[in-house]
Amino acid sequence: FQCGPLASIGDYAFDSIGISSLVVPPLTAASSTYNPSITRLTCVSCSDVDSSGDLLVPASVKNIGPNQFASCSALTGKVTFASGSQCTSIDNEAFTGTGLTSIEVASSVTCIYDKAFYDCASLATFNISCASSVTIADDAFDDSGLASISLPSVVIYYGTVSVITIASCSL
View 1 (cartoon, rainbow, N blue to C red):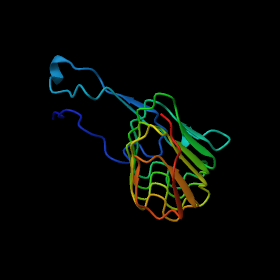
View 2: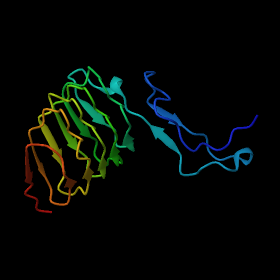
View 3: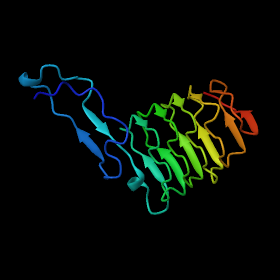
View 4: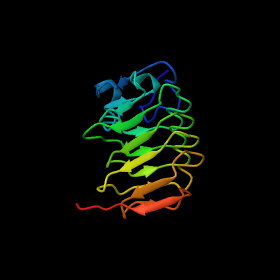
């Protein structure tokens, strides 16, 4: 029995086990089909929320996956991204049902998917950098506490937040 090259790891593969990273072995003669673009997969999970209920997403995290923090009762504060963030997306229902109050989205994020903040009743602040060029799903904030949002003019969003204003940006 021989396995082929690692192409992907499915959703929930390491669910609830507290894994923080997975190191993929380097290319060897025996595995000449190794995908060189996969060098390290770094995860972030509910166990990374600090004692004050805040989450700092490490710079090495490439995306926040579907349901990654869904119903994480520890997440009751703010979400921020480390300087130099490589995160490009916040996937479907990533923060569904959490108590997060604010999020400062990294400028590296280019897509926020369906219901990413669904049922986040305490969400009051959503900040995004003026350097961001992001598309936000129209239902990203469904049933959240977010009543108003200020977005840079390059952001694409046709959602249902009550008050949408264009952020004053000077780059």
